[in-house]
Length: 227
Ligand code: ADP
Ligand code: MG
Image (tube, rainbow, N blue to C red):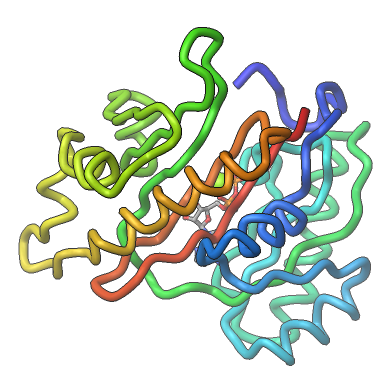
């Protein structure tokens, strides 16, 4: 990623986490419910409504990597922790990214732990829209263990994509872990493909991470770029 957190450049066409989630949700892709709070009091009221534990994340168009900017706080268990996290996020982001325009924070439920995978889409100059699948974290960033297919995807493509990454055995359960619901990952890949077919104005899409469970999968971060 060329963009450093908070440089304030390259925000044209970039949707926030909340806008991105709303858009992909319409396409039938499972995302967690996420609200925008413009103050600590508003964050607290959403948290009360959602039930604890919750997650707070910085909401700013100029900040692509929210964690790098000190903008993500997980597992907040009560209103006091929410209020403190709000203050800490604002302080961290203002010092690390002084030029970023801040909308507030997003508030969402802390999802149960799952295996983190990444589903993305970018436009290749030669092939056009390409869907990407990989395991989260270092598996993608360092090992580049991803599978790619040109849109439109069919069930067979989605099934192959999930199975051809080197990390596939991790999806099948290891060391007593339960296997994840591979069918729901295939469904999500197909959902992304349909979404891209329907919306040619989408330049880039990132669901990172998608939490894969033994029953279902859920995107807890999303980023859409239009244009
Ligand atoms: P960014 O990618 O911009 O740094 P994310 O929204 O992906 O921010 O959050 C960073 C990490 O926090 C995720 O990779 C995931 O491990 C964890 N996380 C984010 N949202 C949730 C959530 N709702 N429930 C559980 N874990 C989460
Ligand atoms: Mg992310």
